[in-house]
Image 1 (tube, helix red, strand yellow):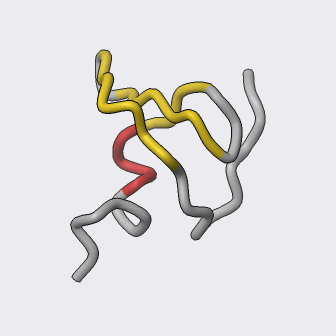
Image 2 (spheres, helix red, strand yellow):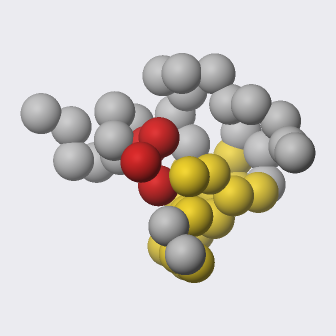
Length: 45
């Protein structure tokens, strides 16, 4: 279990993905579940 990134927080991704997880470098280095990033990625509508 890790830390929770607050909803709406901008994250910086490394581009590395593994089994539905995306590696991030900020606000904390680690991994986030891909489906949780749909409102913070470049693909905003």
